Length: 223
Length: 157
Image 1 (tube, each protein chain N blue to C red):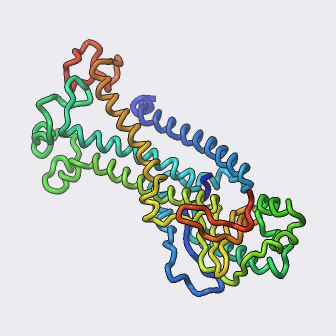
Image 2 (image 1 turned 180 degrees about the vertical axis):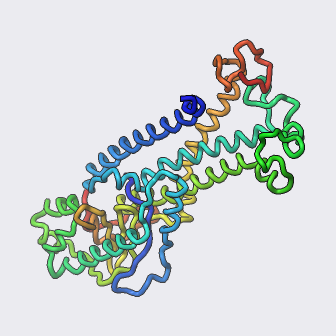
Image 3 (image 1 turned 135 degrees about the vertical axis):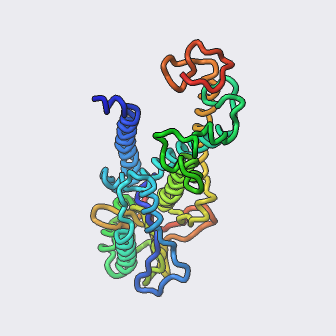
């Protein structure tokens, strides 16, 4: 029970992820089969749909933009500040900060990760591990979107009696960039909204908000 | 409409290998699935190649049957395409009247999920995968200007 309470955030979002994926699979299959019926083509089973490029590209295009959002947020907030926002560091803390403040090497806390206590490349790697993993996840899911997107696009091309697109052609295709940019813009909007809204608005008890009574001008203070 | 697994390669049947081979997506499609982390492996390798072979065989069988056994060629048509042909009379007779170009060998077949395009030495066919195998959705197709659909003598409307 205590374990459940301490892992609640991860567990809740994992359940929400699986529920949303299941819903996407059911509604996506229904849509694909509706179109197949209209075109006089064969229906798909759920297993076929889950391994199809259609499902893969729809999942990947959303994943890549989420990882890009977090990557940019993690990296840009090292240097970029926002007066009054709990999402920003204090206005005098821009940059990578001192070893003492970052608690590395001789300043590491007793329970710190081993690579935070040592110097050299291991500390460098660990110091950027969050950004690197987000970056790899972004590039991986964007690549997946590209590969699956081309296959799904070519499937449509063939149904429309048109020649399939090669790799280079698809890299320049509106389909690829429209899928990419329509997701990016929504992520950037969400981040900008969060940064600005959290200056003036509060959610009592949330670490993403300043304490309710905190002045609008206070920066880098979380509830 | 969007369907099918990420798999598109070329195969030659009864004809030398194409001079410009289609790039295999076997590894890259698997990479896509692994990167996603949720989608089950599409089995695009051997299964993909086998689908190319099957689509090529269906295309070739259709071309050979048009003159010799139009009844068989009709059975290789997708339901909607056959329905369209039958609006002018019995399928075998209508098919013969279309005066389709003759082809004897497959130069290249590209498969994307349940859709395929087969380029033969004298014709281009479009196919779709049904529970009982690949069926021809359009035949006697000639390329038009870039980004325009092929002009096909036989197709489902």
